[in-house]
Length: 80
Image (cartoon, rainbow, N blue to C red; front, side):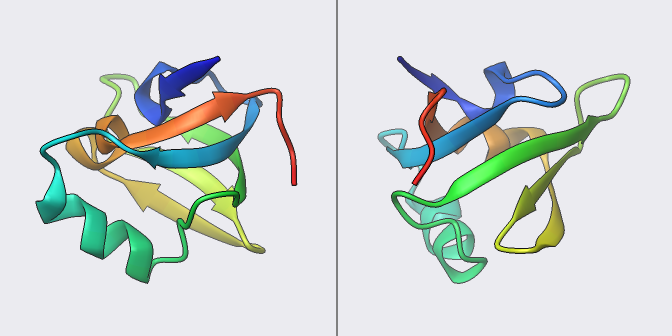
C-alpha cells in the first residue's frame, strides 16, 4: 500500500517507492541523501507538530521537513 512518509507513525518500517508528482525541487535533494527506490527506512521520531520527521536510513539518522516527507512515497510493510 503506497503512502507518503508523512503518513507513517513512529516505529514503522517501509520501503521507498518513489516520489510524488510535481516535487522535483525535493526529489534531487532526497536522492542525494540516499533515499533511492527500494531503500528501507524506519520512522524514529516525529515532532509534536509533525515537523521535522526523523528517520533511520542506511545506518544513519536523517531529519526531514514536513514538505520533504510528504514528497517521499513509501510502501508499508515491505523490506529489501
